[in-house]
Length: 442
Ligand SMILES: Cc1cc2nc3c(=O)[nH]c(=O)nc-3n(C[C@H](O)[C@H](O)[C@H](O)COP(=O)(O)OP(=O)(O)OC[C@H]3O[C@@H](n4cnc5c(N)ncnc54)[C@H](O)[C@@H]3O)c2cc1C
Image 1 (cartoon, rainbow, N blue to C red):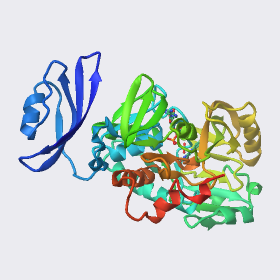
Image 2: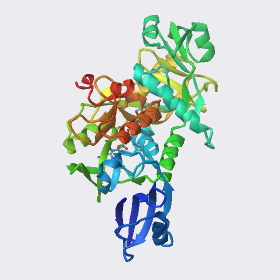
Image 3: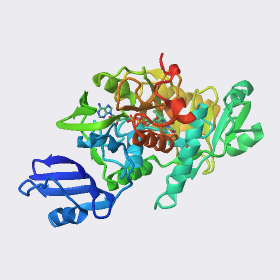
Image 4: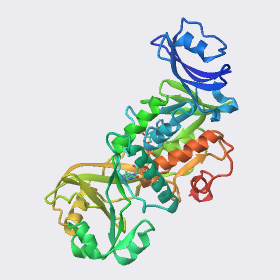
């Protein structure tokens, strides 16, 4: 038995071969991650064992052959498709899933922009906060922290570094916002942690000491590297413009390229509903919301151990960024999917306000940016197969939690995809995120 996909390298005159092979001699399923053959070489119709495969192709090019686990979605005969899974969107959602699926089935990740993580994933505040968000988000944040911390041990530069999260406001709002991961602290303790706060600017405070700063560029690059090392093809500058059902799978057009896949993953961020519509799938009514941030110069830099500080009424946050400070007005304004840019005045108004609430002494704005936090009606991410469109998998609606839930969600999504359309009983977490839940519709 052999199942494979071929991509023509028209310019190079090569055929790119990848897929699963059953070695009759050793009764092993093997994966060819990449083999390249010349168009002129005869491609045999059957191969009985891995030695034949290696003899045929290794001298010709860079064949890498590895043993692989014999459990994938590919058992249903859809391996004639070029890929088992095509992920649309190269932000943190798509990249973390690509890295979780790498080496387990054949995967392509297709990104519209020339660079990965160009949109919201390049514009975050880079903080992971276990006390932030609804219960299922908090649970996924804790799992993401565990997974990233486990990988940090083997990384030259860690992704995580401790940075607590301080919530301030009036008594009722702090009480309403503070969850199990946050402990109440006194007014004096809050001022000790952040001496830049003007004492009468708040009445109550809560502290989340399990919160971490996230080196987002390192995390994104690590996912890209792991994905490619596991055989994932990453194609940038290719916007998916068409997608339709083809037999038991999907056929996609992206830029100049065509793809076939058993599963299409919609990780298109603010464009996730648009991608659904062009795929003939009913949208789940996701809404992108603007959020702006800026790096400002200050007269009095924050101490190194200063937590990230956020208003419990969601009207601002700020945190240390070396000698500068990152600030955000925490706006939540609906937007269409677009390359969002700051609105004039938003940052200037916040600078004036923070110069009364703190002693930072903000002197000027170095840079500012806006990203889109895309949410379902109930504010919970949408992860799972579509109810009506077989093989269409939602990985969207991460809102303001895309980094802090990324590895936990990727782990769950990879499990669901590898189990196929008809998994066993769904876990409580999978049910809370499912695209089929009633609370998703507006
Ligand atoms: C100011 C701000 C601060 C934030 N701070 C935090 C924080 O501290 N912690 C945290 O966890 N989260 C934070 N977030 C949220 C987090 O950044 C997002 O949840 C996350 O980046 C979303 O990732 P994504 O991959 O879903 O979307 P994106 O990064 O937008 O990626 C989607 C990709 O899909 C591509 N795409 C769309 N349509 C197509 C198509 N048809 N074909 C091919 N490609 C397509 C797009 O080009 C894009 O690159 C913040 C967000 C903002 C705006």
